[in-house]
Image 1 (tube, one colour):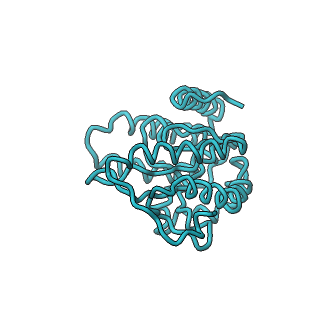
Image 2 (cartoon, helix red, strand yellow):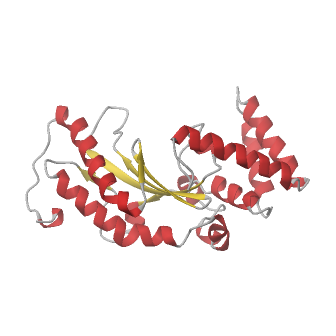
Image 3 (cartoon, helix red, strand yellow):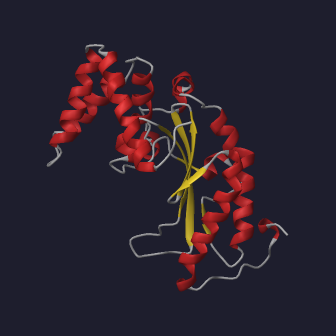
Length: 237
């Protein structure tokens, strides 16, 4: 029987949730292993050239503690994005799974039937999310479809597209909006405290872009990638 055909779902006790989430995540990860994904924490990673395709099974709950509800986040990140992977910023190009999969809810309650739920989620990821990822195999694909990763509307706040576009541009020696992104970032950072190192990094990169010093920028990208892969314990493909 499939999860979506069930009529009754049996709740889990609060003390059962942690183990259930661990088992649930493991099942989805094992299912998607054959599709090239590797589990790192609560996130499933697949490298696609200079991008990561990510499925985030967000079972963290809230400030009140663990919950029986979880959400699934779909993301595309640059392999050079140290802000996301070293400084632990939120994922870029973030989408709720309901934005990609018709008739699916972003939040689900985990119940005793979670093995069936894991199978259901795997099927939906394969049917709808993997074809979405296949549209964006490289940074050039992102730039060729940049209208879908807007910087100038409210979606940027939730989707966090600026870092993705920034790294995709400088990877390809392009400065269409990179200088603008960094200038905006610097203006914001200068109003904050204890961010001197971030200001210097952004300012240095901005000047390199403006000077078109792509050789030095490439050195920075190589080092960024080394840091990211070391942190994630991922072997380059």
